[in-house]
Amino acid sequence: MGSSVDAPEEKPGWTWGQLVEEYRSAPLGIVWDEARVQVLERLGAGLPDARRASLVAAARLWRAGDNVGIEVGYLPGMGDRAPSVPDPLRADGVPVVITGWPDCTLAEVTAARTLVAARPTAKPQAAPNAAPAEGLPPSS
Image (tube, one colour):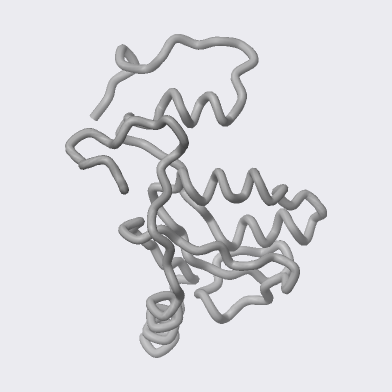
């Protein structure tokens, strides 16, 4: 695990893209949260396609969940998803955490797991000119 000594020095005016690139090899990463992205879309603050694609590609954890209106916390398949927001393809190998309310039944959790497992995935994409992660061969 890294420490504050390992963190890059603070530079005012960094963009998210620069931060993602700077921390790419750190033991932390972006969590793609389906429900929160849906809420942003409903509030009129949706992500531009290019930004969405870059976040999806950089995600190290996928939080699968749904929303109803602006309230998050529903199991996948139990919410009210915005039809204008396509589900991006999760890269193979990115772990998924399924989230829901504590009082969800076993049948609801099982249905959510089945739904998420049935979703297609995409081959991981390396950022242009990016070095492969430590210990992994370069992608072809």
